[in-house]
Structure formats: structure tokens, C-alpha cells
Length: 425
Ligand code: PA5
Image (cartoon, rainbow, N blue to C red; front, top):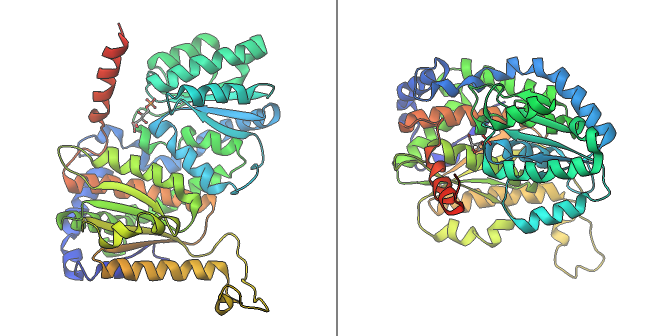
């Protein structure tokens, strides 16, 4: 089944123009897979879904221990060392109540003192473990959080604390690696050739997923199938390549903002992960689509007005799941007090789908091109497929734009000022 459906883009871009992008897009793909483009030292993720399986045994053993002895797993990390895990957990866990296993909380993605203080209070009286994730092992936010929560663990458990700390970092590099070796913490390596925002399929995401009881093997299988499609299918049948080409065509037409939309609230953090992936990969050299995300129908009652009638700089990419996880039928009331009896017998998911269709048509009428990305259902396998699809499209898209999709020098600017203000020696 095809992922991309671009019929609602054809009012803006012709099939001929899409076909004419073949040469450029295949050359961008070749830079990525043959490692000849800028930043090629950071393309290890392209083949990782195959290699990743080696880690599964170690990950599942650690996850079993954490599930046995902890009510909470505290995951410490920021950016690529945070958003992928958060996105997967939000998508694959139930909306309400606890997933099986320990509650998974996050720290080190914010410097908020109130958040940190409340988290310390929340952990009082609970058994917990820490998974600190930092590829460089030197990032300030997670380093501060680790200092705080390591102390909390040591005060609570004494010597046993070291058995409750799991470190995910680059082996042989950075302060975190040194601390882990010195204290004998269990370690998971992040390959040097996989950048933060492309790392969710490594132990960065897989350990928290396994602790939550998510089938990490299925995630990697889904990613491997998306990899196979991305690497082997010809241009016009290759969804990831077409997505990259269409984004680039829209950008050339002055559509400088991509809105990633979904009708399933579980995708909120997938949208955050996507924003980092594309924002950090493409926003450089004065270029790049601005990635934004919305959840419909909620945001039709906030941003809908702008999308319909504001500046015509937007195009929309809608993630659609063909099958809902759950559904319900709307009932008939004896007295039609709210005028909704015309919906009786229809399912709520059907209503949501008509909202999607109606919105796509309205936005296309309002000069907002629409792309639909179809996935069969919400599952671990499809999450793996989605992640790989977007990462591959992002790498190709960056090369089409003429930037290095794998560096992020712009992130250093705020750090320099902050360190000066803090008097860092
Ligand atoms: O994509 C990236 O490389 C960044 O967003 C990093 O993930 C983020 O800055 C965190 O870095 P680290 O994992 O080194 O702590």
C-alpha cells in the first residue's frame, strides 16, 4: 500500500513537474546512500534497522530488570536524545492510565526549576531508575538533571544506586562516558555515525520503549521494511523520494511552511520529533521550510482561520491512519434535543474522517496544497516505518535544498551566550 497520496497537490503542481524532479531527487538519494554528500559521516542510521537487532538482547535484559525493580523510569535527555522516545511512547501507549510496567518520566529537556522540584517531590517514596541519554555526553541540560537525580538515587539507595543507572552515550567519548566507566554503570552505545535526531531506532529510543513493554523488534522490522522501499523502489513508486521532491517543489513556489497535521492526538509528540528532525536538518544557510505541527480537529478552532485565510505560505502534510485503534457508534435520542440524530448509527471515527476530507478540500480551495501520508494503523511496526520514512525523506530533502542535513551549528549560538552569562570557566 502506498504511503503518499498527492492528488490534492495537483492543483498547484503538475505530474510533469513532479516527474521532472527525478534526476535531482535520485542524485540527492545517491549522496545519502553512497555517503558522498556533506555530513556523510553521520549517515549510519541509513542501515541501522538491520544492525540494531544485535542490541535487542541487552536492551530487553535491562528493561526486564527496570520493570522488576522500578515504579518509575526517569529518562534524562534533550533534543534527539529525548523527542523520539517521547514520540513513540505517546503514540504507542494508551491515552489514559498507565501502560504496562513502570511510569516513564522525562528530565533534562528543560531547565525549569519548578518542573525539576516537582519531579523530585513526585519521586519521593517511589522506586525508580534513571536512563541518562546524551550522545556527546556534555550537554548542559541533561548534565544538570543527571547531577540532581544521581544524588537523589544515591541518597535513597546508597551503593545500590549504581545498579539503577543506565547510560546511553558514545562509547569512548565525553564526560558521561567517563562517569559511567568510573562508576560501573551499565552502558548502551550510540554509534558515532548516527546524529541525535536520527537516533530513535538505537538504544536511545529502544531502551525506554522496551521498559514500556513495546515490541522493539516490531519497530525495527517496520523500519527495515521502509528502508527496503526507500532504497529499492523507482522514483515514481518511492514514497519517501516523492515526499522529498514535493516538499522541495512547494518551497520553490513560496510555500515556506510545512504544517504536519493529524486527527489523532497521540501524534502530538511525533509532531515535535518531526519539527526537530526537519528544523535542525534543513534550517541553515538562510534556507529551509519551517516545520510546524497541528492536531485537528482541535486546532481547526485555533489555527484553522490562519490556515484557511492567512498568508499563503503554507502547505499541509496530513498523517492518516486507515484504521482507528478503537471506535464507537453514535446513538439516536428519542428527542433530537441537539439536532444530532442525523449522525445516529455512524461511528465517531467516520465523523473524524469526514472532518479530514472536508478540511483538505477547504484548505486546497484556500490555496493550501495538501499531501496525505497513509499508514494502516497505530502499531509498533508502523511507528518504525514512519520514523524511517521521515528520516530518509529528510536526508534527501536536505540534499535537494543544498544544505548539510546532518550538522546543527546554529544550536551553539545560544550556548555560547549562556555560558558567558553563567561564567563558565
Ligand atoms: O540532533 C542533534 O544532534 C541534537 O538535537 C542533539 O540530539 C541534542 O542537542 C542533544 O545532544 P546530546 O545527545 O549530545 O546530549
